[in-house]
Amino acid sequence: MGQYVFGIDIGGTTVKCGLFTKAGELLEKWEIVTRREERGAHILSDVAETILAKCAHKGIEKEDVCGIGLGIPGPVRADGTVLKCANLGWDITPAAKIMQELTGIFVKAGNDANVAALGEMWKGGAKGYEDVIMVTLGTGVGGGVILGGKMVAGSNGAGGEIGHMIVNQDEEAECGCGGHGHLEQYASATGIVRMAKKCLAKDDTPTKLREFENLSAKNIFDCAKEGDNMACELVDQLGSYLALALSHVAATVDPQVFVIGGGVSRAGEILLHAIRRHYNENILYALQNKEFCLAKLGNDAGIYGSARLVAGE
Image 1 (cartoon, rainbow, N blue to C red):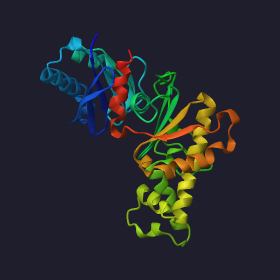
Image 2 (image 1 turned 180 degrees about the horizontal axis):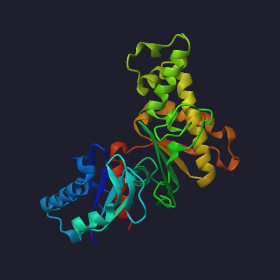
Image 3 (image 1 turned 30 degrees about the vertical axis):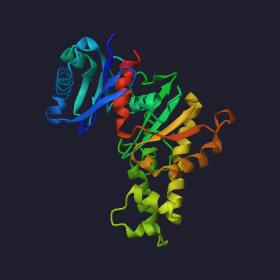
Image 4 (image 1 turned 120 degrees about the vertical axis):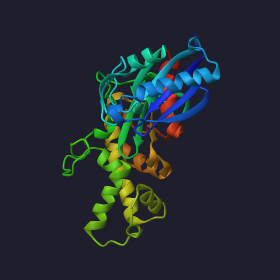
């Protein structure tokens, strides 16, 4: 039985790579460029090449590696087939099969958000829990579902797409997916800035937010921490939409803990407070007072979770 695992997190700009012990100790991490030209035709071969080169450099035989885990930014079926991935240029791609053929090493693949949730359960903010919902708040809103310590991907690998839950049926603006009123339009970094610009354009209410030429989510949270009324209202609104979506998720899977990650989570306790403030408002008593915590692994959650895909075998 191999003692090493590789955790690979394939992103649109870089591929993050990690060499781990099977117990989850990160021995080394590095990155390579994601070559998206020719519809991402070189990505998997580049990953295979860097893994085999690392094995050669470290004197690691293939028999010493129990597997390679791949985190991919798109829907991934249980057999490791990716059902199209616009960020990489892929059509339907049997990613795990191709990687296994290129390396001669066992491979498992999963959606990157689900994999990140697995990483946080294994070695991060949700360590000690087995029923976990992770929400990543960045440019968009992603999510991952872990039940009984296992990743829930769904029939087509699209489980956990929390960002596209409808939280406002009256919204006229389009989500990036073409829908309307999705959580991503309010709880992402771009979403809270969009809401702020609408407020600023509506009237002349005094607010420090008017001082920023290129307003960011960080500016809004920083101003809220300083007590700016409009910023505080915006953070509360984000918390309200996010709490509504998470209450729907809780009513479906009853998790032990919600882990909040992504760039927006760097706002810290003010964000958790905004969610907790609204979460219990319209939910069954048995589902109230859930644990909410911040992710701890940051950009490494994907490589940890990918490694866990195969370390748990």
